[in-house]
Image (tube, rainbow, N blue to C red; front, side):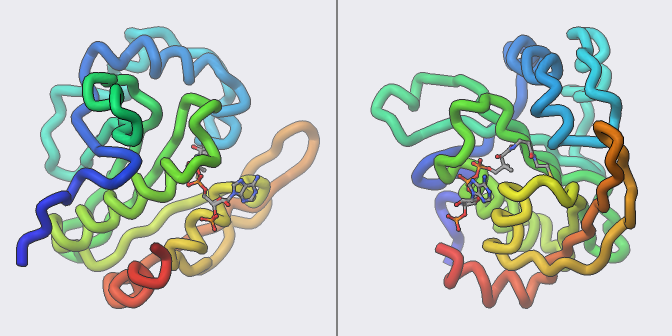
Length: 193
Ligand SMILES: CC(C)(COP(=O)(O)OP(=O)(O)OC[C@H]1O[C@@H](n2cnc3c(N)ncnc32)[C@H](O)[C@@H]1OP(=O)(O)O)[C@@H](O)C(=O)NCCC(=O)NCCS
């Protein structure tokens, strides 16, 4: 049976990112708290041009799939195209059917409401059932408790650590590597709902 709601859940849907989303993305990239959770690059504001190059919206999905996270859980939300986050499958290696995944709910007021969890569930279904990948992996900083909880709740297994990989405010922190294999996802997806 073909799933009818591959990219749509009860709370969020995954859609294309468009040029109209760039102001929101630029705003998030001016928020050091977000940037310090999201990646290792110095938390430094980027302008539209720099971010348009980073998120090359004309790029086809050869080895990267970029999604907008948008809400569906309010009556008006169907027309409300507000971007609340980004989700990216990137670095796909087709020979081995592996990918990295990253997620950011850029609008802080929408964090902690289950949007990230459902967006990840949709992305995993897309990765395993549409792209037919076998392994999805990600990295996360040891101080990012919310993200670690989310990934473990989804069945990701901690496979190792890049020890003391980053330094912030005079302290060094590990960056953990997590992976999820298709059979593990099959088993965990029902229990994680
Ligand atoms: C990490 C992130 C994607 C999670 O998405 P979210 O929508 O905020 O999270 P959810 O509401 O789906 O909650 C996920 C889990 O974290 C738990 N959680 C919430 N706040 C928490 C906290 N402060 N500490 C630990 N766990 C927390 C929730 O209870 C939930 O677990 P549950 O399903 O067992 O109840 C989102 O917070 C975010 O984008 N943060 C900023 C950028 C970032 O950190 N990106 C990830 C980089 S690796």
